[in-house]
Image (cartoon, rainbow, N blue to C red; front, top):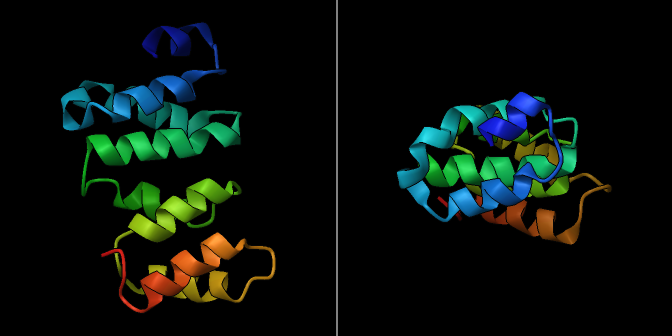
Length: 121
């Protein structure tokens, strides 16, 4: 991933991120480059992979990324964030917004409902 970053090769790093996620905390050295890709990728569809990898590699340390992802344009990022973001007023407010949104999928509505009643955490 570092070579891809240095070369400005933005496509396909999500597959590497998915692979790194399987290593969990053992892949901690990849955190900085994963975070850079998550923050700066021009391919929004790859962000869910980076987010899942960061969460797998740094369990409990991705609160900021998860909270920000509640507003991501990619549904899979929002869904993962709804399921894993740390509880608090910001999450509760966003869950209420998502629950009433007509543009969200039934899957996201269901995940939102579970979190609102205390599920997933």
